[in-house]
Structure formats: C-alpha cells, structure tokens
Image (cartoon, rainbow, N blue to C red; front, top):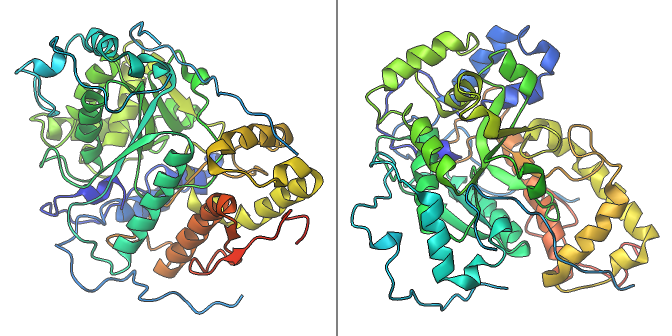
Length: 468
C-alpha cells in the first residue's frame, strides 16, 4: 500500500512482492542477515511482488469487516533553526498565498519545460529557483527550512475491503503531522509515468513536485504505509546541510553489497540541480527505460542476496552509492541514528512502555501538563527534549519512534507477508495510529483509552496525568 500500490495492475510476475525490502535488516539482527539469507530472501521476495495482483476484487485474505469487540506553568517558545544550505545560494516572514505572478517571465513560461520523468533533463534549476524566489519574496524568507511532503497510493480501489479505510487513516496521520509543523502535503494517486509501476512510481511524482514547488528546499517522500508516531519530532535539517539526499539504512551493509542495506520508502531530497540530475539517473533504471533489462542483470550480479532479476529502485540506489561515490554517494546521508523509518514489528510492542515513561515525566513537570493551543505545540516539544535527550532515538529507545513503517502488511491489496497474519497487521496499524492520534487529540482535550479501539475517546481531566 505504499508507493508499490501505485501499480498499473497490468504486470504479470510469478511471485508476489511488497515493500518489506529493507526491513529484513531491522527484524533480523545485522549479525544474522546473511546467515539467514535463503529464508529471509524468500520471505522478502514473496512479499515484494504481492501488489502485482489482478484488478480489485471483493475478496481478500486480509480483511477486517468490523473492529473487534474489545473492552478493555508557561513554557518558552521560539523558532526552530534547522537550516540547510541549498545547492544554489538562495536568498532567505511568511508566504503570501494570494500573491500573483509578476508580469516578468520565469521558467514556467518556457514551452520546452516538461514535468515528465522521461523528458529532456531540466537544466539550471538552481538559477531558475533563485529567480522565481526573487519574484516572490514572501516565499524566499525561510526557504532553507521549508519542506514539502509527497505520498500516494494506487489509482484504483483497494482489493482488501478494509484497505481504503486504512489508507485514509494513514493519510490523516500524515496530515496531522504536517499541520503541526507547517508542512504542505501532496497525495498522488495516479501514475505520472504509466510504465513506472509500483515502487518506481515515486520518482516521476517527486520530480513533478520539485517543479511545482520551487518555494520548498526539501521534498520528503513518505510511503503511504508509514505512520508518524512521534508528532513532536522534527527532522534535524542542520545535520544534513552538506547533503542532498537522506535515506534510512546501515552503511556497513552497503559496503557488504546487500540490496536490503537501505529502505527507499522514505527519503528526503533537496530541491536542487543535483537532485534533478540524480532523479533522471535513478529513473533511468526503471521499466520505462530501454536499459531496464540490462539494469536488472547488473543489479542481480552486483547484489548476491538479490534473488529476482528485475531492476528495482532500492538496489539501484545502493548501486549508485557504491559505484558513483564522488558524483552521488558523497551527497547521500544514510541515517541510522533514529527511526527515520522503522520496521513495525520491532516497534509496536514498545508503545505501552513509552507511554508510561512520558506520563511519568509529565507527572513530575507541571509545565508539560499545561493545556495549550495546538499552534504552540512546538514550543512544548522543545521542553520535552530537555527530559528526553538521554532516551535514545533508535532501536530500544525510551522515546517515541519517529516513523513506524508497515512494510510487508500490504493493507490495500491484502497480500501480506506470510510471516504474520492479516489480523496482526491490522491490530498493529490500529495501535500505531491511535498512539499517534493520542498525541494530537491531547490538544483537543481527549484521548483513546484503548489503542486497539480507535472509535472510543475519553475527555481528559484538568492537570492530566497528575490527576489520573
């Protein structure tokens, strides 16, 4: 149900495939990654191709027609200084949304400009962005920290009866996060390049978003089956000021030439000429390219743990990191210090303990219990950091995981990985989404008492949780 669900449903491959690509390295410890090679690879491949099924039908092996019957002081504020230098030296208020285009021409007036991924390359993009921002000065202010989020799913109804409901819930989760952090979001459910099915669908979408949003310094792709589970955490943009692409992964596994050494389902890419060139090269490995079969052979030869021959975006990205280090690899940051995206099976079971830890801190710090408007939540998040700095931010962390990624569940198609049941996936997603929703509802005075029952909320008493 991630970018993979943007499938054209016209492909006919013998094995199912899902986006459980990199999660094998999270679910199985690094030391056993290659020891369990055959079994892990089989599970991954079975899952990865699951979205190449027939057109939606009323039946599915992952269906939940109804929810199970379960009983069950003033804080300082300030602006975040992320900061990241762009590929171009762009002039750095608030955007004026009703601002009209000035009469002077800009790159949009060029009849040769094309948004398609297989069109002639976009040239001088840094200069074009800079000129556009000069024409629109209200957008130029603060541009270095501006993020535009992109996500999406398939253009057809989900085969799994509960799939569209889950897509909606997962999208709501992203909208909640974006609203709290002043991030614009675009949800795409069409194939902008019909031949670029499944996971390849993200590349033409991201390129189009770069052209449509010159006011954004960063484009943030997030698979539709990924949920934000820490609504306070903000990307450490200053950490990436020397890089143009951020991806979650394990550098030592990249060196070992494992195709599961990164996860391409969530990435942050700078809106600059480097990125335009990179997207063209990356997309050149896709199914619309005359070199698609050749790239499949090259990637299969390079990555011995890759047991299917088709060229995929993830292997292609690892290949570029390894083989074109100076041109691409040096500008790619492989993030492994926090859950830029984390495998759901190692995360969901930690929610209850994390909730109790946060409640324990609030009981001791009266200022954190103070009711406040949602618009000033970031000021409170900064104070939370003073009490969470030693909590870690990755595997085994005592703080909320940033993003929980449900790779392998395929809630839209229902063709989940056979390592677990559809009900296990469903319950885990409900729990993650309610866990995140409680962080949002807190500012509205309510909370889900049972994370597995998203339909029920209780009003919060004054001075909660001290009064609970």
